[in-house]
Image 1 (cartoon, rainbow, N blue to C red):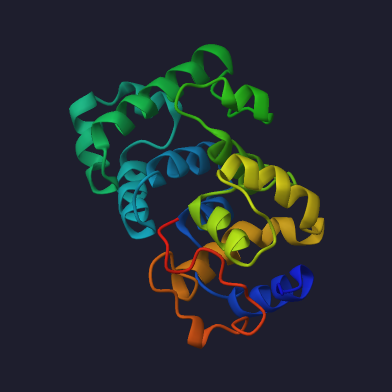
Image 2 (tube, rainbow, N blue to C red):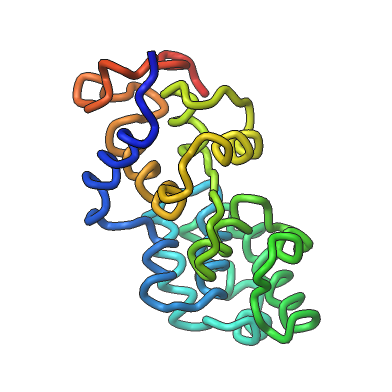
Amino acid sequence: MTCEISLTMQKLEQKYISARKPTIRRTSQESNDPFKVLISCLLSLRTTDLNTERASVKLFAVASTPEGIVKLPLKKLEKLIFSSGHYHKKAETLKHVSKVLLEKFNGKVPKTREELLSFKGIGPKTANIVLQFAYGQNVLPIDTHCHRVPNRLGWIATKTPEQSEEELGKVLPKPFWKEFNSVIILFAKDICRSISPKCSECPFDKCCPKIGVGKRR
């Protein structure tokens, strides 16, 4: 038995549509700036949303353009994004991406997946986040939460986020693609946690097959 996809998504959207969105989504809504969306996403890798927000706010107060980041001394950039973790590597990535944007794209963030993936440091999730949140394209940004939850619900059976993106594209109705990333992340952090999910509080407890529950995924 599995929870019906459309009904589940409708309930999740109703529950979380008015909730405070993750930093990257709010950045896109508040700034309408593809560069800030891209940088916030790169800062979000392997850290919490709170740390992403702290680092983004500090950085954008000093430098919010490719030119600004290229001109920043590396040590100062590292200090600004320290709260995001892995700040040495992230600072190098931000410098590289900003430099390539200026040299090859006239300082503009590309609007195609192929061009975004040509950057060292930009993977499928980051590319799709930029395409969806910055440019309104109907794609599926898949992080660890968006990979784990659909597998736990039995909608798909995949081993990697890349596989999940492909399989979800086949079964998830397109009207739900726009909010999928945001509501699944909120649901995953609120109830459907990786470790010790709150199944007793979950509105889908009776239909969820709980695939992988009790196992680290």
